[in-house]
Each structure stands twice: as structure tokens, then as C-alpha cells.
Image (cartoon, rainbow, N blue to C red; front, side):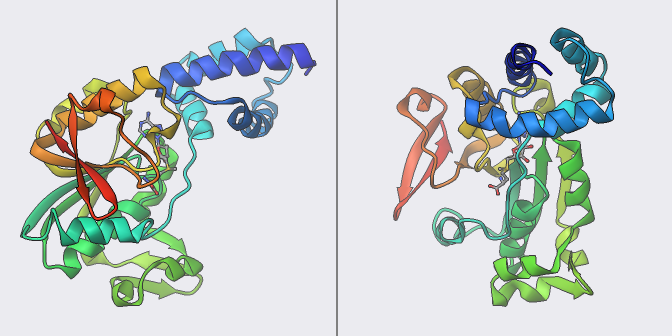
Length: 264
Ligand SMILES: C[S@@+](CC[C@H](N)C(=O)[O-])C[C@H]1O[C@@H](n2cnc3c(N)ncnc32)[C@H](O)[C@@H]1O
């Protein structure tokens, strides 16, 4: 592909991804995507087509849109990610809870919702965790609950009886799997959140909104707020911050060195 045509395609793709997902891809992230895209275009025999035709192909129907979405999302995650933040939350704002409904939005391959279910079970808290993501491929893997054996290193020893090592695989045990379900949802689509209105005590959305711009972030936060119960808690990553322009939606609560956000 000629350099000019390629940069045209990259721009069109950036716009399309933004419209579909709310993620604004900066140049360095686009470069990573270009390589994956080239491979896909060759597979689909589209690499010689003009940029507009390529984008139109992907927008033609739901299945093709999904191909593009699955290609662009970054599924990086791990069990007990930012454990100190999780321990702080369970040890303070959730300390006296006997039952909890938790959502993990942008849950990727499921390590976050399974971690939360394990933490609830350890503390004798009943309830459920719902994992949601825009990417159907990661949700398939999440539902299976089967991971590589070496991911056991991320699971603290006191939780390892909740998983089973089978050959080269690590499997989430039935009692934890039974607490967790998964559904597809796009953070910028209010319709995906309406059926879950006012349902959750806590909503996690960690390491997801970092690539959203101000406009799509407000839409996403409004959707997340809508599925929280009155005074429910939003948890974003400890490396992210919710600026005061969003304090009409959430009020920050500082516990130790961490900020959590209460529905206003
Ligand atoms: C880096 S992973 C974060 C996983 C997990 N929350 C964690 O912190 O380990 C980001 C996830 O957000 C999802 N995502 C991106 N845009 C989304 C959107 N518009 N709606 C729902 N999920 C989205 C991606 O598919 C990806 O699985």
C-alpha cells in the first residue's frame, strides 16, 4: 500500500474506531494497530482496495463491525491487578456488606470479575459479579474461565484453592464461576445499560477510559452511573483520576491513598 493511501486509511480508521467505541487512538497506538490491520486485510483480500471501500466493508454489518472492534481493543489484564486498591475497598467501604452486586465493565478475558468473586467468597459475602466488554472474543474466553498455568503466580496463595491446575491450564472452580456472568456492552451505548439500571453496589471500570476523549468519557460515565444503586461506588484504576468536571456525576471519597467515587 502506498504511503499516502496508508495514512488516509489510518485516519479513516481512527475516526471509525472512535465512532464505534469512544476510544480515541493516538498515533503511537495507531501504529500498533496498523500491523494487525495489515494482516487482517491480507486475510480478507482487501489490501488493494481504496481506504473508503475498506472501511465501508467493515461497516456493512454487525459481524464485520465486530471484527474491527475485536481487532482494536486492548485486552491486557491479570488476576488481582492493583490488589492493594481492592483490599482497601473491601476493608473500608465494603467492610460490613453481607451481599454485593458488582459489575466489571471492560472486563476483558475475565480475570477482574473472577478476582472480585474470589474476594467476596473469602469474606463470606454473597452476591454476583457481572463482567461486561465490547469485545466478543475476550468474553468467550472469560466465559470458559480457563487460563495458562503460569497465571497462578498472580493469584495470592490464600486464594489458590479457588482455582485448579489441570496440565498446562488453570481453571476457575465451579463455585466461583457460578457467581460470575458475562454480557456484551458498549460503554458509549446507553441502550446496553438500560436493562441494568440501579442494579449494582459497585461498578469497576479500570484501565478502560484512558483512551476516551472528554465527550465519550462523559457518555461512558453517565452509563456507568445509571447502573449503580443510590450512593453506589465507581472504581477506576489507581493510576487514573476523575477530574472535577465529572463531580456532578460522582463525588470522590479518599480512603488511605486511594480515591473511590460515590454516585451523586
Ligand atoms: C486494558 S483492558 C482492562 C481490563 C481490566 N478492567 C483490568 O483493569 O485489568 C480494557 C478493556 O476495555 C474494553 N473496552 C474498550 N472500549 C470499550 C467500550 N466502548 N465498551 C466496553 N468495553 C470497552 C476492551 O475491549 C478491553 O477488554
